[in-house]
Length: 441
Image (tube, rainbow, N blue to C red; front, side, top):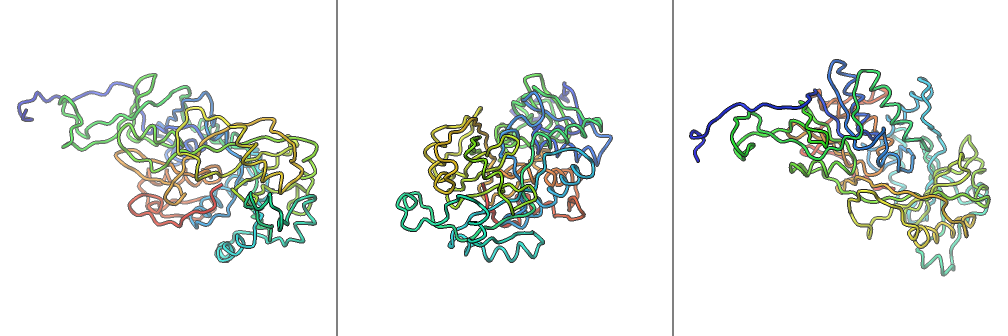
């Protein structure tokens, strides 16, 4: 039917209206809301989340660690400035974030160390503080650790090579993600920001840029934009929607055909406590706390995180090939994964863990950017997307929030904490200019 034959009438929106709606009250979404509101105090900025409190999704299920040692220069910048901001919040503002600089320790075979040598020069030139530990140092400092696997048939089957050196990132450690989320939530609310919990976003609302009241709008020949969100509590409208919901981002964006450029992948954490492993919590020389750093073993990305309050460790791994990209509504940890995949490597390197079983376990999902494992921050049809943090959102959250605020303000560069800056379009789609990140844990 010709357009001229239709009865054209302006359509009216019904529902509560805001300037900015942020989907996701995890650490990324709350950082975005905080920085947008900080720079625009008069805006009505509202955060929406399916949960009942801040940071209760994958933020709460993370390993709770931070580092500035990355292969990508951009990831190093984002993480380093974020760590500086968290230190400012804890030390200068007096808001405890559980920020503890225990360090990251990579235990490396000779082959792994050779691959990293070229990277170390560029990392040091940027001011990233790393320390190389010789075999003899490691043997003296970590009592009871196995380092030599020559002639060990079991180690050969596991693919374990002898430990050649240790690489320690100094400006690295552990943190409480829920406390960071609480900081952003508290400060955002102080500025007049609103958070609607128990509000699941079911889809985005797509409309024509100029509504004509024609049945079936928006039609293919009309310019389109996202004008709001559909929730179980009704439709909400805003000039700008920020989608920063981690693995849930694709679920929201798929509803209108926007590609989040990320895929979800499960990561599991196992809490292990026993008097047998407490010796590792009293390891001198690596840090002022005299505790073993967050340590990555030389096979399959198995890591252990010291948890002094629990007198134990959290154990995880970066399983990739074989672990499907699969969205799970409520991911669950798999005890057999610890028993048959991680435990053989863990107990071979650290006999302290022999015959020790997990006392607790949980699982979350990373929003993996499969292209280069750097964040994606871009705008399309009235939606700003911040996704693809690839498991390192904790340390990059503050920088991502500042970049999103700059993108909202149409700025070419974002000012990161401490006076450094980054060109916003570098993290976008059409002008993306980043190195590939190879340290994904």
